[in-house]
Length: 276
Ligand code: MLT
Image 1 (cartoon, rainbow, N blue to C red):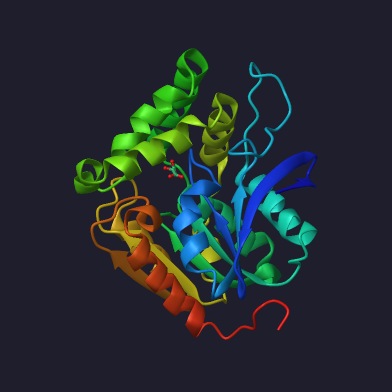
Image 2 (image 1 turned 180 degrees about the horizontal axis):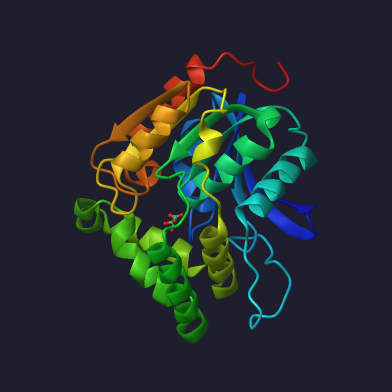
């Protein structure tokens, strides 16, 4: 399904009945990473899994490849809010973002606090890029411009899953790789420039008033546990859960454990389902 927001067509999947819940994927992925949630949580949540602009079935920001445009986290947050408005969910919803999707979710928490019923931060951080990380983004942009998006997919793949899962789950590796290879070079560059430009969200954390669940994969090779602990310490009503035998994609690597944690969190939330 698609809606027009901020001058682009944005695609999303919809599933289930209950507490409204928006899923925001990470880099360089699509809404397909949430398939196991869309099937298993459909008795408790009305779920929307967005394809961020340029990803999956959503349109790219218009413009020539030679003049890359940053996909700023605040623009991606605005896309998400307008998507919700367009499909009749102009009410508080639970927002769940993974990694770059977590950066977008924190922007929603900051810019649209009235739209949050709850927040789930998965494998993400609040801090801005370090100078070294920014230099790495520039190098990655050059690489994509010279050699296309597949080279980034190949670089990311060994880091996305917990090390033991890369050999244990070849089908999952294939699936994640296929998702990454579907993301066009222009969108990867937009993401890299957008993430590089993002501000430090740490000062926003203490203002988050909704119950917040933080989920970390114990074998995450990208986000250290300490980053999520630091976030949890700042967010007043928060709970941090570590999922064993999972890396940067705990929702895909350990879907049953992940879904159980989210189900418990949703059950504890004191909000009405949409339309009740
Ligand atoms: C992601 O998984 O979205 C990215 O690894 C986040 C990042 O590069 O900062």
